[in-house]
Length: 425
Image (cartoon, rainbow, N blue to C red):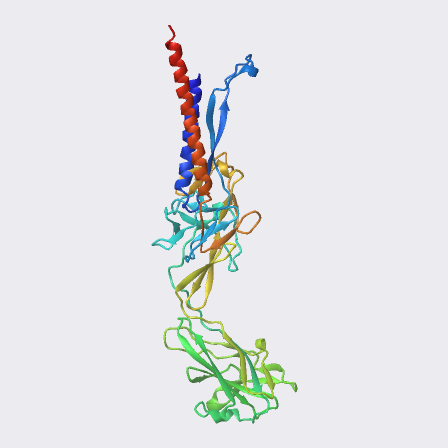
């Protein structure tokens, strides 16, 4: 009996050593969760036996329980290194078209040759679909999809509106709009230019010319040119060379009261470069255009077009919103990182490669978004280190070794007693 009891102790101590050694081996493994051995004693007592005098039959390994407490965050220079600060696991798919999911705390991701975001095992990071402002339109794991970075350049957008906010000097001399000459600065009061774009993303120079109008009090004439060629303002008054211009009207306090025509829209201009004809609205009201006795000053000048762009980087918020940035200054939302929780994380099945799978014991995966409810936040440019306390593991290793030696000594003692009995004559 003593032999079997001590042998179970040796097996238990050996298992404890194995668990501790595995923890030590993975002390530097990203996202690793340490384990501990949970042991139970063995008692063999029949229904009518006397428990008061029963002697235990040894020990067995009841469970190897992983401990899911937070690991430290190690910061990196890679924007695709992600760590979860708090509860939750990344949802991953083992292959591109697989409906099966695995889960991990290791967030060392990169981009494969097809533009998908994957980990070192080739598993695909899953994201929820979102609208333009980053709100998830579906937050179930079945609706998540592998994250893919755009492989094409950002689509160009033709300029359709120019917004101007300026002060026009009320104390300047009035000029006749019919005498405008773009090559003679004395024929206009002031000018300002802005780069605009056609439907192919080609850039053009849009210039506005301002003249204090001799045809009315508190009235300014506005001409528009594109790449040095004057363009008609639809419905405007005929001016230099028969070109139509618009007028801005101010009250006695210098506040803009309106324009003629209203709104000011340029006639479509053929560009002869394969792009669509370009027409633009000139918006002076949105940016507080004034006429007071101070120098000409442009406080705001914006347009809504942009050229084509290439992907220059990613921004990932702490709530998991992934935004692609382009060289043309534009951005787009690609998705929101999908996270999962389980009622019993210790019931997850270990798959290796820092991944777990759902089991009956773990319960069904609960999908969620970072920062919502009990889900933690996403830290970009960081990795969660192993939660192994190396010092504690080394101390435990010594304890497990002592246990093994003590059980071996018990076997040796039982063997000596047995030899003594056998040698009785």
